[in-house]
Length: 464
Ligand code: BES
Ligand code: MN
Ligand code: MN
Image (cartoon, rainbow, N blue to C red; front, side):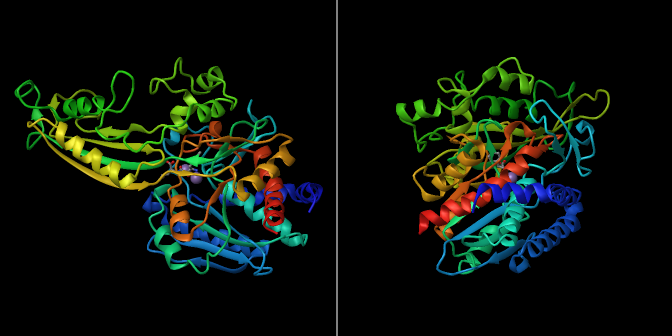
């Protein structure tokens, strides 16, 4: 297989490749929102249809307790290696809707400074429908031109954005069907369109919810204020106490298992191009903030964090209401790094929060979904095959990077299937994933379709 065969095929099918993706993006497959259940199911059927059309066999919408997993395969010779492709067809909720410049499920193409060739603006365009669909089109190319060098299995889920609760059990039940050599995933980012990179790690996650209860009812803040604990005041103080003046997390034993990188490893990481001024400009902030002693890249790549995702309680309606609320709530997440364990950290957090609460309130801590951190070896065949594929299509060696986000199922692929994952992402962090005006560059979409078949070729050759 030559690169030119791929670029010729893309050139001949450019508009269709784009239009097919736009059609998928029009279905609001929001897994977190039960109002969109039918849309999520409809998207699974659409993905199934597309896999069939691309040439996959045994394509099936596999039921789970939650949303289905779409499976399909092409086995050309059992003796050849098997690449297992993972992606997700569900998307994040689109709100706040008023901050979108165009409706989130009516994709439009617009040029931006970073994407002068245009980008598709729609929820899920980058995360992950656009990136997942590159694999379907790369596969189509290989099937239709008779260049598929090895076996392929697709596993596209519909619950990634809600923590993949059903995929874990599903892979355990389908170990036989999922036998393969490597997992290939495009659901991460590259540094920039002229600076390819490959994530060699993902952070884990522990997601908690806290409920603070004060008096048995909302009170008149004049009659009782000053004498009875205000749960919101208390909660804010408890949250604030979780970081010290160096933005180091104060929860006892929190850092006990954190793997510290050697000076050499940190030096290597610091070679990745990063422009702090552009970073600040993109976010319209005057300064960054984080753990003392670590760079911005380190703070998101190799250090654990604790962040409040939402906080509520009391009166938030129009005008003013003098009230001392009976309850306060917060959702708090911690990003984890090797070798932290999400269950252990959830337990440590719970104990700590219970211990720091004053006697004037009651505290209830519950854990939501979590996931474990992962690292990918740059010495693995999969990484090398991916790196040389990118080098060929970008004309530059990709930089190994640590991704700050989480894909909880990746650790389970290793644990349950014994398979390493290659994080072959093509998006940009600035593509506004999970934010209003999410977009995906046309350059990135087509570049992904061009690069993926070369991975298959390289990987198969290395395994020979
Ligand atoms: N695709 C992202 C994860 C990601 C994005 C990794 C960019 C690296 C770079 C994924 O869809 C995601 O959003 N994951 C969630 C996990 C959660 C819902 C369990 C996350 O990271 O918050
Ligand atoms: Mn994703
Ligand atoms: Mn996501």
